[in-house]
Image (cartoon, rainbow, N blue to C red):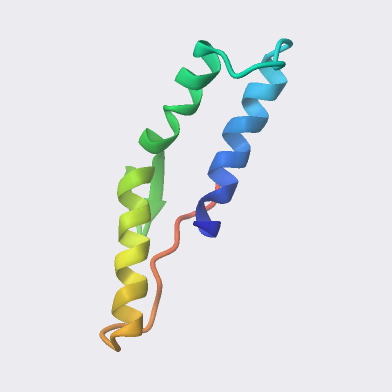
Length: 78
């Protein structure tokens, strides 16, 4: 999950910068946060939604543990 934290931080920072009423997590804020899994992420010159990219990273980690590859597929940071 840590390789994807900058994507979350960037989105939350954008929300904070645009909003003046952040006392509660209202419907609008929830809708903005729900867009996170669909953000485009680059891995190995391919673009895919963040939720797919996390699966690719996890699968590459599993292959490293199994000795099938030596490199984890990390996203390109924003």
